[in-house]
Length: 139
Image 1: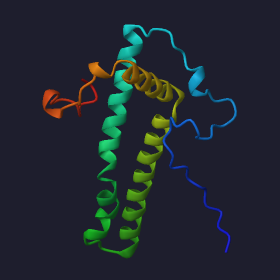
Image 2: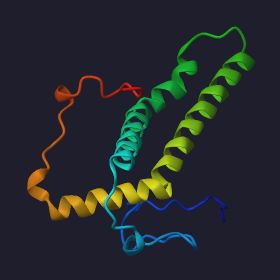
Image 3: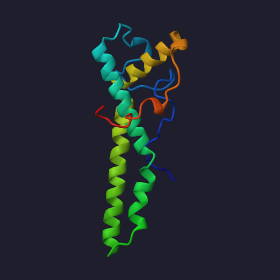
Image 4: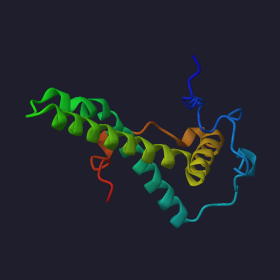
């Protein structure tokens, strides 16, 4: 049996052996110039948005099956609600995937990786207790 399902690459985004579509920038071609404060703020906002979206994806399966756990007047309504939850979940996954694979995100990850390698003594683990409003996207 042949299936025409798309093969999913599970390797990390920034691995040196991951295939890249024609025209995309390789790690060695990322800009090494100093980032100004505005660009750093934008990168932090992007990382925060990624973190929030990733945390929200943790509840995606319960939200998909939620319509199946409630009583519906007709099977058609059940089907419609289930289909709607799957569509919403798929949309969230696609948005997260686009954000993670965007060229800007790759540059942010590359810069973070190189800075951490060069200045490993300056980095310490992040603690949610130090940032109680981390889940608010507007802060």
